[in-house]
Image (cartoon, rainbow, N blue to C red; front, side, top):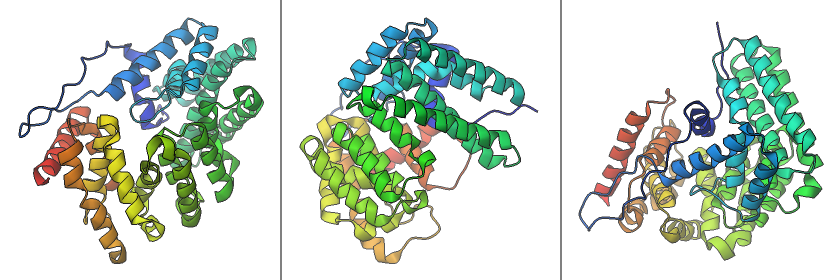
Length: 394
């Protein structure tokens, strides 16, 4: 029987891209219609189109072995701190696009031995590219993300099939190699945010304590203070379930908010807590609620960013709902949850100009019971219904 490694959901678009090629960008999103009219539903967002564009570019340059051009492009995007609407660094999407042939091979339905052989050949080719361009941080970043993606995929496989020691061996080998490359390019990378972000992704392999983990993320935020993605990742990383502590999370959130205040205003404090609260409501215990709500309002109003507005609205309406599918909710925290939930009508009414249904569907899936990922049309329909229900209540 053949087995395949389940790669992270974030890699699904680039794997489809490797199989089907790049599709031209769709027309620009429509403006908000007149008051009272139904908001437009954007089934394919600017986020997806931009991600596909950058991944296609990375894939093309890698297949053509135009490594010097890829290195220049990755470093240019990194210097400009270019990011997708959800904060994903463009340098990272280019690197993952360049690695997508190898990642697709790892995900394909070959038998185990054949899959490992083909993946090993693909990784060897990327190692050869780095050997031929030893001073190219952009090429190094491609190899780092290849090893990180394969390593965490092996970790998931080892968790589901503990009788297969080769999966655990692959996990350690890939993560160790990613760490070696990051260490080797630490000086050449300079103030690179892309390398700092990759180091944060590799942190679990190093098993740092909570304070060291926080310092790594704060270094990343200091390098790229305008990007909420780093704050969100930091909050999740510092939860107790990931060997962090609630006290460390709150201290780091306050420091990160100070580092990002010039770019994000009070929204930095909100972004540092949002995903953490979605996973662990105990974060409310140390939260400065007034600061958090001010940050929530600022995040929803961010430059007319509709991805952010949908994300914040879905968080308030669904994640913070009094009954959202989880078995236990602490009644002592209920008033604080309610204060956040009560922001949903205002966010929907004042800041939503279009519906991004996949944002709503993914928010609902994260807080509900585990189930197989439905087909995209069903997720679009479910997300649209959730958003329209929230708008009707606004």
